[in-house]
Image (cartoon, rainbow, N blue to C red):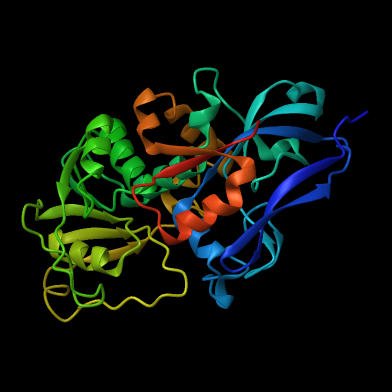
Length: 340
């Protein structure tokens, strides 16, 4: 008999405002599990866009989280970085720590096939990075770097830092992480990645790229994760002839303009989209999404990745935390939510 019949969940009740609601949860059926949340992570880029109501109507279906409730723009229960322990349901899962692509909620029931066991040597608090690590791993596969490549990652947010770390640790080629925020240098150092600061001239973002002074140029692969149009324009400047630029940012309902009439054609550059919703074609024979998630969780064994957890708050404070991160994120990378 299930002992938990209700849960508390975070809902975006209207763009820019969230609240915690109580809702009933069912008893787990055959093949289902009841999970008690321990931590969740805020995927700051995507969740800020969702929180602000900036999901384009054309993307409502594609942007649905696996266990989302409600509809865009609001009210909607959204999120996909939950870590907890199985308390009821399928006996083979009871007591096991799991990661699930579930919104911010104290308890929840979902199919056992939708939870992923966390390795014993990955702390629960670090496991909230699993969804971001999965995105980074997929982006690395899309870029397909080799040992002799010269790789620049533009944007030292959570995903950008993880992409740079994955490329360095799994491929071992030359990697430079670029950001306009000089404080990201400390995080890059803890991850063992070379850092370079991009300088802006204070003009509006739409005018042009950041200054490339001090940045490595002639890069064979440039991976863009900053979410800023100027970052993508900078990628065009840094790229070598015949280079590939992998676009991992999601701009929501914003338009991006690029100068493609200069050296874009003469250098035969390629701009390639990367999105975690689909495996790269070359990986689909040997890999599936469950195996990819297992790999992402295994990569989280490195304690250096704790550098990406830059804050923690109690679940009850989540409405205020989300509002602050959406408007004034400061130096936040991954903000962790604790369920006491």
